[in-house]
Each structure stands twice: as C-alpha cells, then as structure tokens.
Figure 1 (cartoon, rainbow, N blue to C red):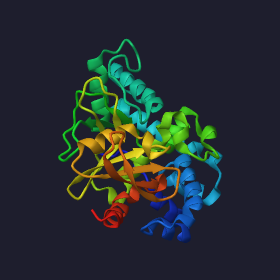
Figure 2 (cartoon, one colour; figure 1 turned 45 degrees about the horizontal axis):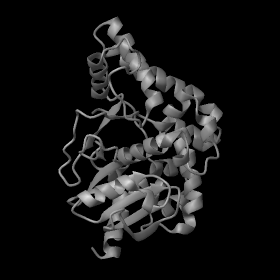
Figure 3 (cartoon, rainbow, N blue to C red; figure 1 turned 90 degrees about the vertical axis):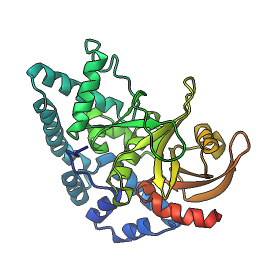
Figure 4 (cartoon, one colour; figure 1 turned 90 degrees about the horizontal axis):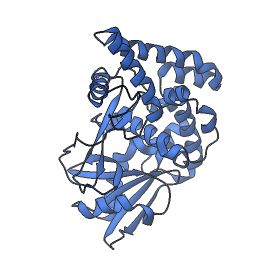
Length: 313
C-alpha cells in the first residue's frame, strides 16, 4: 500500500519539539519508570495533534491546537480530492468520498461492508470502494489471522479493522479533540478507538516497525468473540499485543492466544509503568507478560529482547 500522507512517529515528534531529555528517556532500554509521567503527558499531546509534519512543526512552536485547524482542513481536502480523483465516473467518485468520510467515525473499528455508510450501497460496491482507497494509500484495512504461530495467514473473509492515515486528522474530523484534552488514560474512552488507532500508527510509522502491514488475531471458532488487538513478528515468533487497562487476569482473549501459541510471551500496552510479571491464563497455564506504557508502542521489539532475556526463556 502506498502511503498518501507522511506521518511522524512519537520519536520524531519529540525530535521536532527539540526535547532532548525526553528523547533520551524514550530511547533508553529498559525504560526508566521515573520518566513515565512526563512521557505519558507528551504522548497524549502527540495523540491529540497527530503526526502530520506541518501540524507537528506548528504545534511545537506555538503549543496552541487552535492554530492547527487550517492545516487539518487542507490535508482533509487533499485526501478527499484524491479519493474522488481515483474514480472513473463522477458517481463513483461521490460514493468513494462518502465512504471515506464515514470511515473516520469507525477508525480502529471492525466493519462489515454490507450496510456500511449508506444502505443504498451494496456490499460489493463498498468492498470495491475500500480496496480502491487502500490501493491508493488513503486507508488501510487490517485483517485478522486465526493462527497463533507464524506465518501470518490472514483471513480476508472476516471483518477488517479500519486504519486512517493520521490520528490527529481523525480527532479533528470527528470533533473529539476537546474530549481528549487532559485525559489520563486513552484506553478508558471511546471504546479504546483512539488508543488502538495511535498504537497502530506507531507500529506502522516507527523505524523499528519493519513491515507496515499490521494484523490482529481472532479465535478460529465461529462463535468465539476472542480477539487480540495486534500480533507482531519478533524473531521467529508471533507476539500478541493488547492495548488494554486492567489486571492481567482480565485479559481473557490474550489468555486464549497464549494457550494456542508455542511460546509463553505476551505484551500489554497501557497507561501504566513498565512491568514484567509471571502470570497465568484462566486455565492455569503460565506465561510471561510485559506491560509497557503505550507511548513505547514503537519500541516493542527493543524491549522484547530484554524481556525474553530477563525471564530466561
């Protein structure tokens, strides 16, 4: 997929801000928990404004989000214009723009093509529209895998999750910027949509992320609702990553993945400090959980190295 919009990672956001101290904290492995509160606040700023270079540059200079509206408007106009321009007819262009605009409300949400956006659109029309938008870098559809070990064998017959080019644009277009201001835990609001979206953006834009295609996991059984937010490759392992608050015992979908996997490692990203612990699934199977503050989403692999050495596996 071609990316139609360049977006900065959190690390680049800190570089643009010229905050050398925070940048050094962010890059330190393992992360020093005394820097947790400071980095969490900065990451929430980054989540609010997004990673569009012009937006980040102006925000770094002004610290005034109200000044950013013209840049958001310009970028949205360009994206919607591109959506219309890739169509072969005016009618198809109007449909593409409508579906694209409606998708912002469903950022980081699994969708069904049937009935999406406008009931007049048939499932096939919506599917074709989404895949055309993805082909031109305007959106990404994340598909699930039902396997807990490599290779990633995605199931494109199951509902995909929507990923837009930038979280800041999603916040602005959907009018939720005020609701995000001064939030202490992004996973506690909007059914985790924003925390999931910004973590996905980090995984795709960070230099450490490697492959820009993301996947998530669902249990193979038809009636099961078990779902793990992301699965990433580290060495020859498929590592589950949950973006969720709460005690490890409540991570039931993660437990089901661990029981199906050939290794005992799992990652939880949350609004809390770095923590490693031995845990048990609901059926009593032992595994090792690394809880990372979600602002380290782009540094998962570096921390996984130390995590695995620490637990001696």
